[in-house]
Length: 366
Image 1 (cartoon, helix red, strand yellow):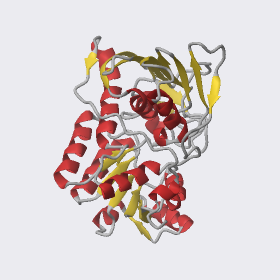
Image 2 (cartoon, one colour):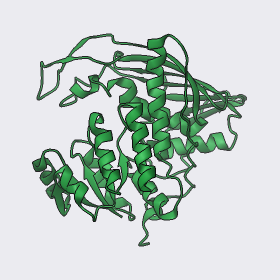
Image 3 (cartoon, helix red, strand yellow):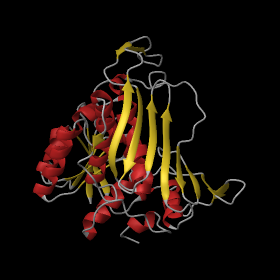
Image 4 (tube, helix red, strand yellow):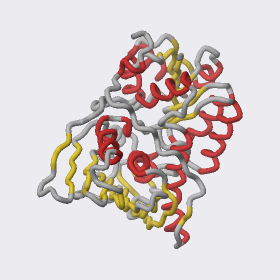
């Protein structure tokens, strides 16, 4: 499948590096609002076409668009691509607003094309191994979970951290998709939410180059504590924070009737995975049962292309991404409105990847 990338920022490099691993799609073109940036990426990775966004969207050879633009324009670019009859796979989050997210799904359905979304880290060895442990009954029935993403913010290292503190940013919209997608993969969809959100600092100072000393006006909450009730009856506590210097909390843990699983960082693809059943005195590291333990971003694209070819639901389907978007807004809404938020969205729990899959599974030439 001929693929075009829109948005040639930092994240584009790993997609371009990994595209050669998967034989069912090929990057044919790159585009950026600054065409010179697209030309640089094209030259760097040997891509035949460097475009403006409009030029790429008009290219009839491009069947699927990978949308790597900033969150504020995710929906605008995606809808243009969908209306042009192209499949779309986007970076997280799906959109900034629920309304935009719904419109994206509607246009995809109207045009008979697929829409999928990052993150695809839950397809990696670490979380797929955790999923297998749960499915095989190692901890019995999951009854609760914890998920913690707590850092001091991005202004100390990112070359331009401003958008992390604007609408569509903040710790929940930036990193929440990794944690929420992992939890849904492990325990299914969410039904009800409550939470508390606050803005600790109204202004931040960049201490990285090239914008050292620049002041950022903060527009979004930066400390979000939520409680998620799952359709299965399980409950999870989640914290996403740009206001925490240090902590010793786990990334994700799943607590079941027969034991506990320590799940690896959902921002990564690998392990380690630990399990401790109720009769065990110590934790045991579990050998990874699946492939893709390195940085395999683009795996979700390969799975979506395979889904298109085989007329099945992609594991990174837009309904999953919209459910994550609805949850993130729901935590903020619950805090603002001082009440629980009952979700109207849902999704199917993604199918697990079969054991033994590697790059060759997606390489139709082998």
